[in-house]
Length: 426
Image (tube, rainbow, N blue to C red; front, side, top):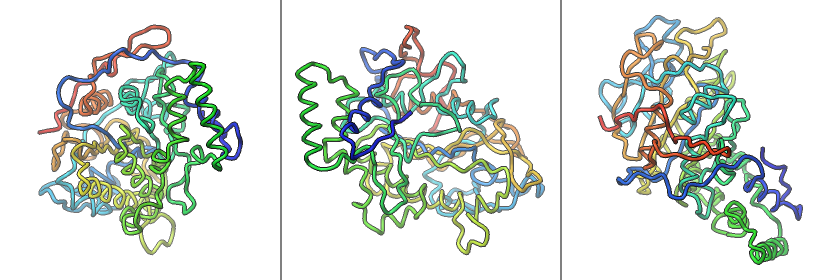
């Protein structure tokens, strides 16, 4: 758990360092990176995590010809790719679907938030004996040592309603660094990087030099020093440096501004950014939650229109800046929703079949991989497991899924054990 960090307290920096360095279970660092010899298509990744379980039927896999109770309250629209239709409330993404790959046959047996989250993010079914690392932390572990943390979570990494740390058995250096603030707020700042006046900075610098003389600066502590003492590191999180026009493109809500911050971090070579968007556990009032945002809204500001703004702006922005081909964008949650509306006007948990969207990072756009049946209930062809998905992401980022890390008790654990990579170039 992150410390209660007070930027005006002289112990603030040591709290941050302790959070990064840790004193508990720390896995062994491999002598050599678990990197594939071949050139990787993607150097970095942004995961848009739709926390709570997004409905596939109201987003990526609508069933316009199904009965009303299956079809739901929303329609489907044509996209830039003939024959592929998605939700009517994703019109901007629909116009750029030639850059997206939809996987419509993801399947899992785990329909509980904690378990589903762990499985989707790590590729391993959860077990009481061991917490497996999230893919983002595996990437951070292999590409450690940069100016900024290898895995940054915006605005935080509280996912699945659980205590899933993300780093699993790896060292704290691989843990997601939570921004812990709402990027959509006018006064947004990363509190853990706000250390006060020049005198405070000079005091921290003296501590760093003192620890160096004692030979006590480990990699995680050195990372803390870089974050706090380097202006370039702190400026990476400064959204006020972005033009107003750019900020408006992403939309005013947290998901949009979080995606903009993710783009800034990618430009500063952060290997993996998780954008966490809670609120997708829509058991009731789906129209209000997913489309309107609140009762009586004149302009739709619900989950899906806000996601549409954020995703379309992110893809266009990455492409305009020459970053899309090297940045893998992943959009997913822990499971889908039931193929039939419930009595409260929502849908319940449904892991048997759901969808994931990918863009950039060498992925061939304008395609659909797999298919669900006519009700969106089960995979009809090419089922994809969370292990397959994790294996694919690792391989797309140039990591060897068969390579191993070592747990604190000396057990070798493969980065991915049960997955088969998906062909993203069909």
